[in-house]
Length: 259
Ligand code: FPP
Image 1 (cartoon, helix red, strand yellow):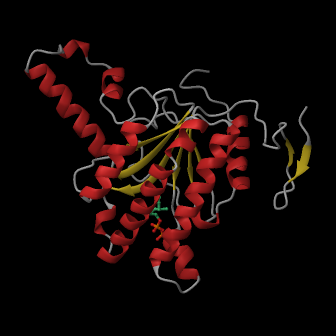
Image 2 (spheres, rainbow, N blue to C red):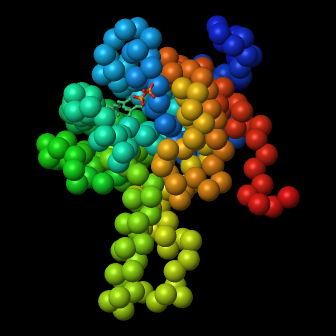
């Protein structure tokens, strides 16, 4: 049976399972997370912005692991958007270096991920990303098992509108070459040409740092997502914050346009 504990910060009484992890009556099948606030976290400490990204990458590892442990089966982290290339070159380079480090580590730990049933996937436009990073991404996707229990997507050079435009272009080509009828195109057809093909739409999207917008994240897929915002900056985001979002999700009344 579960035990009850008191969260140090929120003092929410939590029902825990035998592994001392919180239990939920309903869990989102897919959670999207916009990792925002790294720059402000660094600024508050008079540090260069890239230091905030270093801390943000630590939080990414911590929350990714925790989410999988509590039973979320699909997670998508927004790590770098198609618009983020506009940032100073030094900052872009620092973020790319963090990807390099993480991907190298993920490659070294692939057996561990396989054992835990975690598959890493990358969503976004791989063109434009440094070649060695794309090589690592492709290699990791190739060695990842298909029998995974948890899919961990990292969105790199991702833009929701860009993704939809690509899907429309591919579908238009199929029609042009007689491989598809215009009358066959429905909402599912478009989903099938997105990076997230075969995955559930995100039930819950979390954005820390006080901004209340989606910023081109999972634009098509988020039509019925529950949104959860918090003022906490991403490097300070804890497992407890994640639990708070899941608790609120448990109590949301989802109607999908019905009554
Ligand atoms: C947004 O915060 C954050 C980013 C554009 C980069 C996010 C990248 C990481 C957390 C590193 C991820 C690493 C791996 C290994 C996946 P911001 O810089 O816009 O923050 P601000 O709004 O406070 O300026």
